[in-house]
Amino acid sequence: MHFKPFKIIDSHIHFPHYAFAEPLVSILAEAGVEKLAVVCTPDEKRFSLLPDALYLKGCYPGRVYLFGGLDISPLLMTLDNAGETFARYVDVLAGLGADGIKMLEGKAEMRKRLPIPDFDGPVYAPYWEKLAERQMPLIFHVNDPEEFWDEKKIPSWAREMGWYYGDGTYIDNEAQYRQVLNVLDRHPDLKVIFAHFFFLSAQLERLADYLDRYPNMHVDLTPGIEMYFNFAVHPQKTRDFFIKYQDRIVYGTDIGAQALLADTGVGIEAEESLARIEVVRGFLEKEGPFQLTHEGFLFGGPQARFLGIHLPDQVLEKIYHQNFERFAGAVPKLLDNAAILEECQRLEAVINTIGAVMPGMTGDTSSITKVRDFFSHSI
Image 1 (cartoon, rainbow, N blue to C red):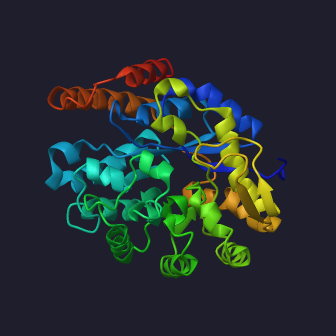
Image 2 (spheres, rainbow, N blue to C red):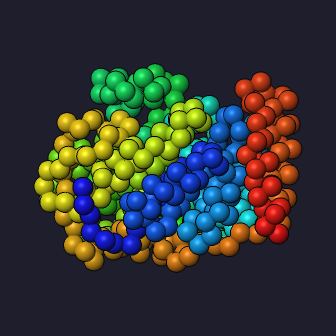
């Protein structure tokens, strides 16, 4: 599938292991992606994927934005003071050279596994205040497709992934929306991208109301493949929405998500990654029905049909790179090697401590060793 030669920044890429650096960059070069943003998530085996992201950014200076994940250890050890610790960690991440913060803590599955308190409660209050004060960009995964809470509507593949949330043991998605919107009411200047279109692709009027209310709120286009089926139900309505909110929509693909969920040895696959690019860019650029030429994870195979809305070039320029540059900066921030070495030492101590008291943690510090070696030689 051929696309127009725009400058592309992919704002939402997962990088689960330092060994995937060259394959990832090769895939993106083939697809004409100029820059990328790595979004870090908690990892049950290695605790933090921040070291891997720092390594990638160090290998490709000027091309990689880094959205670091929070150190989740306070949720496991000192819950009452977690927000204050998170607020301090905002300063730590900024000092390392991170361009923003990524939170997966709004995924219902994550909230069940970790003792995450209410986002609008007193525990998180110092953290939100710090983010707003520093104007630190945030990419926030909140909820999942609404059908994941409905036993009759959830797709079989989602149930097989363990993403059925309607048994009463998970947070309700509407309760979580209320919590997050309360945070935005208190901090309307919070710079935030809600991943996967805030999972409101089937409720565009509702999303429009939020975008009108919160001027620093954005959404990204990372599939959630249900988004693109929802967009196709009323294509003209969808296109009108994209034209109206062209300054608030950000390009992203979620490349690396499959590798994040799989064993480390699987890697970031070219076929699956190119399918993600085809879904998003085909939707934005093509006019009418189109099919994928690559096979994607959970995309429905080659028989799946999508619908393009053929946006004007000036709108595409904003979505592909200008909106993200306004959000996170025209160029990635510089890394501080000494600060990175100090943080690696601290993370290693935290991992060893948690691993000693929690059998589920393997205490794997191999990525930290790799990063320490890389940045030691760079000083």
